[in-house]
Image (cartoon, rainbow, N blue to C red):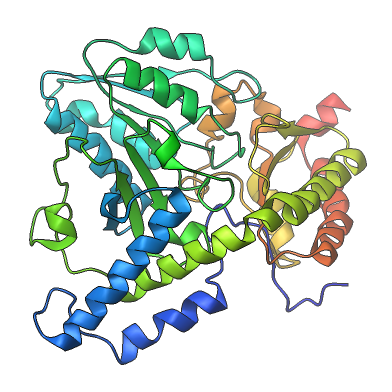
Length: 394
């Protein structure tokens, strides 16, 4: 039995626990080695060496060269940088290809492009099917001579569905179109080797793989035309102005090392825990629906709709047992609107409003899974007794 004071954390796609090993390597750069890495003196130089080493560790996880790694403040900044860089690098090209299920970092940027660029650009948003997957033929048809960039997430943050990034990047390269992927959810969970892919830009965020918040990365393939988003000093070889967040960068480097070491466990033990949770919920709770492709999915993510109840009410009752999950993206879960991802998949209204995303990590245990399986059926049953939709259907 889980003790009441223990938090059962299953919201790792929103943010992750900072690994103890990460915190350990960060502390000296918050207390002792606080020099500016751009300074000429040795005290700053040793800090610059730590940033260089962290850059190497990130590059190793991605299968990239260290010179292709640009440190940013977060995944959102990395996404914006990639898209605006392409728009400025190719001013005669005014078309963007993306999907209807992107994270708000890309979705909302594209929706506001008309205002931000003076109504000069158009956006093609690709549909997904009921499993949350894309039609590659429709994608190929969307590519045009004036396409400035393709921006497609590697794995969906709500359903965990993995898109065929290798093939999509190859098709874009054949048309001479830069390809960007928001890989915030994929990095550290599935193998990535950018040397074998035609990806030009890739975004990641430290706090999604047991690193600290406030640090991200934009991978920029060598030779890709690039215009900086933040203009200032000469930091990051002129690609991103602003003094580097050294402690967090060092922490991110260590987190990438740990992610590489733990990836096998992520795809075996964590996946087995997810499957046990998923199968237990679907078998014990009637009118429960799995959202997303059953196979082409991140090993840690399960999105389940409980029909005829509200996701927010479910979360509130789960919170009474210190069970943490999400009703969708952490950037949109405060909204009463159903998930744009589930709407794009055609999930019925009565199910979309009752969707819960469980996202696990290497820190989850089988005891926690058993505890959630014990508590969830009575939570859903109790809420359905108060639901007018349930009574009407019963």
